[in-house]
Image (cartoon, rainbow, N blue to C red; front, top):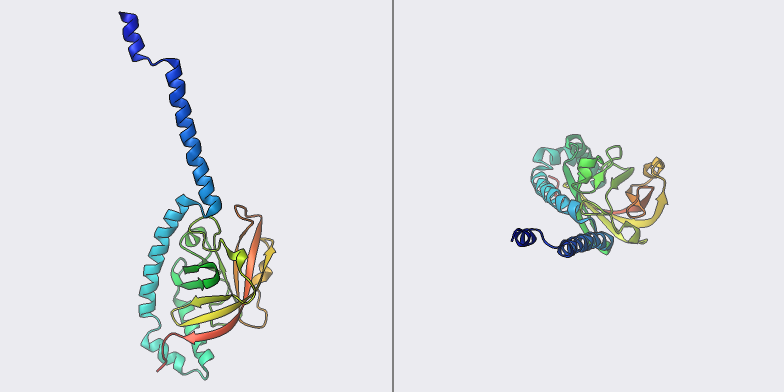
Length: 237
């Protein structure tokens, strides 16, 4: 009688092994699914967090666009001689007010299906929200080389398909004061220590950078684009 009761409480060894094998198979399938998702698209867990932060950045950008440029900003810009100079004044005023981590505009690249809010700064926290503007480079409209960095596999992976850009593709930077259309010149794989890619080159240029190859930080891929058109977003007084 005692032996029968004990058998009812303690499952046979074969049953325990079956339960363990099912658990291991299930865990393995979950891991494989996660790997497959990452390889085919992007890392899922950080993407959820990145989506939340990107939504916050989008709301922040809406508020920013409603307040900048102000009437006073527009009056100050109106004193400049040419339309390009007026945009430059607004870019300088904007640069003076932006804080690290704040939304600053939107990057749109139709050929790779990208439309994402960009932020100021390339620190870890900023890049979790979206592509980040290199703080040591000028804002669009200030001349020189403007540069942005972004992730390729984590936090929405905004620059995942940077390597698919081709010569002549359009890249638009929608800033609160103007929209800047650049034409892609090409891409190049460089060393992470190659800071010369953001140096001035004698004309307004855009550089987008990301880690390369996928799932590695051993190198960087950089896309280069030349400014083709500037469209003011608000009429000056």
